[in-house]
Image (cartoon, rainbow, N blue to C red; front, side):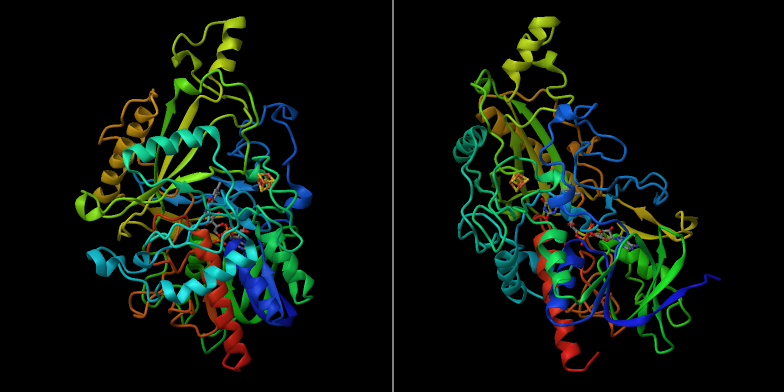
Length: 565
Ligand SMILES: Cc1cc2nc3c(=O)[nH]c(=O)nc-3n(C[C@H](O)[C@H](O)[C@H](O)COP(=O)(O)OP(=O)(O)OC[C@H]3O[C@@H](n4cnc5c(N)ncnc54)[C@H](O)[C@@H]3O)c2cc1C
Ligand code: SF4
């Protein structure tokens, strides 16, 4: 039996996790006057203090190359990765799901790509449009006011385009495209592919006490000037400033505790510094540990009232796990060779993107994708132009090799398709009955199977990207992947947009939380991360996690004020 050290203080709200969802919940609820505790598995991390934004790659003995602890490069602003020491997860035999976890204040918002896209009206009703999957219990009009408020609070650049299913936001001006992006746009215009300015949560004008971006291109390391969005700087700091927030750092939540009525009473956690089991009492619990981890917490919170896990009477916790589809192509563009070296850094991601531009009713796959771009003269690290011998007359030794690196550097472009999958019953997570983590907490076992819908979509991505490279007068060195290779469709989870597992709905037999992200079976339990998502539109999910968390938090604050919680 675990001995819990109980905290005598009772908070109004205990939030698990401080990333996009948890940071927004902490911000909203502390502003509303609630006394809030946040249980966070990682240590303190503020980009203004801890980022490696201004380091050169040659400051590193590995020239910025990745390490097991830093899969995206040594200076990347993330503590965590595909594997977290002492915290395994397992997969069903023959199946593969990659699970990226951050363990730090702010979670993955410290190093994410900042691509910040609203879902469109159709994204909430795909089920009734084509019979595949389910509709959300809310529609675009329910969430639009919260998108507006997130835009104003966090800051986003973009352009007003009036596209039907890619709604405009309240944008700051977008930066100009780089040279290679102008060439891509030119090719897309000729091919009839919509190509517009990117939408990134990066400031191009001052906002509050935050200054605009100075275009160093290092957003993934965290921004020392707070010109991009991270939860610790933009949400947690103001929440702390209210005096209503207590952070419990390096605190690994084990389970949500309940009383005899089956209401949540707080959260038990492991103090990672001492290994002691402790407990925080709260009148309301908000899960925001990321979609799969929130499912894990629910499944591990077993009691006589909830023998199959908290709020899991429907058996839906862990079900309908989704990720964005992904496939990529790199191209060599001869006309971009031997350009005079110049600073092409810009903001930390592409300055253009291509929203979905076709009608799936005319295609052999049901859902769309958007295209993200990369290329040009970004700061070279270890391994740049790997395989320089593939370029015409490239390679060799000594001076020729050095000269070839200079000639070919900056002459490549990359396209990444990011698409919508149809949720299916074969993608889910459950508790592995045989494996526990270093604290004895049972771990997740993943099941994953792509369907033909996603494989056919990846084929279309490949063909499209290759046609753009060709229209730019370029060459793709890698052959088209075969159907057996799923046309290059990447592993489930590898786009790091995992959603679902605690999905929302009006029917308690088919969903875990209601339209306000409140558990059907536990009146004082809410979910504020990607868990409640019913589907996985092609748009990157974090802007919607933020907007939904804001909406959920406002609902919690209203219920508290009415004395209903
Ligand atoms: C490299 C990269 C690029 C990305 N780019 C984009 C992009 O451009 N656009 C986009 O929309 N999305 C992007 N994403 C995805 C985005 O980061 C996530 O959608 C978002 O951060 C999810 O927010 P969250 O609050 O659910 O989870 P997280 O941000 O992961 O936060 C979860 C928090 O919970 C804590 N936690 C977990 N388990 C426990 C526990 N048991 N006890 C206590 N604390 C716990 C973690 O330490 C973490 O701080 C990217 C992700 C990565 C890794
Ligand atoms: S590119 Fe801009 S937002 Fe990104 S780290 Fe540099 S200054 Fe900050």
